[in-house]
Length: 114
Ligand SMILES: [Zn+2]
Image (cartoon, rainbow, N blue to C red; front, side, top):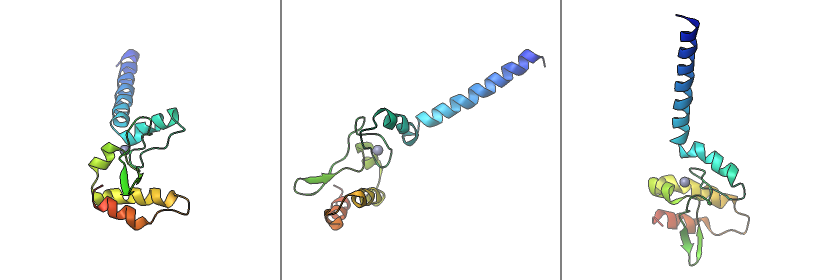
């Protein structure tokens, strides 16, 4: 094998590895959302996929009249089961300053599929 062929093989291998890497990153919202967060640092984001609220719509869960929260985007909310959603609500609720609403109200709303 000549020197040119070796370089060609190396180039093809590098091309294959980098394109596989790009496809992997672009097919995984949790990974590429990093770039969106860097572009929109002032926005908070979906707690599941990490997309900032400037780019995705949050799913609002109303736990009392006129009071709601949205730890997840519509896409993530609809792709997760109620049991899978709960930890994200708990995480958001835990991050709130005191005084905060009763956790049981939020848990009840999530379990009702709101
Ligand atoms: Zn999401």
